[in-house]
Length: 156
Image (cartoon, rainbow, N blue to C red; front, side, top):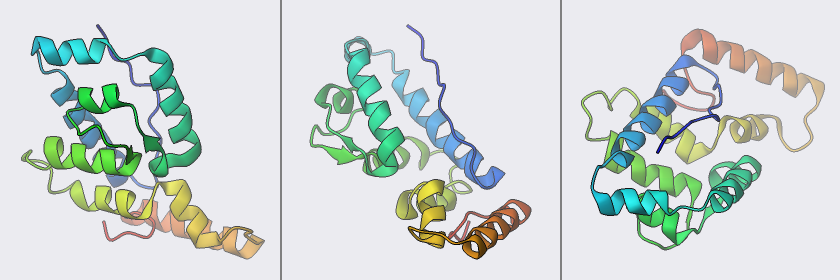
């Protein structure tokens, strides 16, 4: 059984990238639980269902509805539907927050989970029908984020 991660996005600064990598890594370590029942739940996940969820999260980001009871069970979460942000919030609380290195990543993750993915935060800055000057300001803000190691719209 193998897991291949093909879809990780580059964010506005390395701090955000590292926070996302830390959250993903902590959750993946939790998925490696050798308990046979846990492994059976993982192996029973249907690829088409996972592909559908991936497509939904590509379209809807953190607002995508995660309603697959087998997936939620495999993640050790209650089977009530959740938005993707809520799934990640629970995984971060359970898998990353207790780790010794978690403190430096939590502010960035809180910004992402609270304000949305980078695309959503960018859209919030320029509005639904951005004009040229708003796009210029956004580009300046993104350059400032990279230089300062801060997230767009965040404190981290």
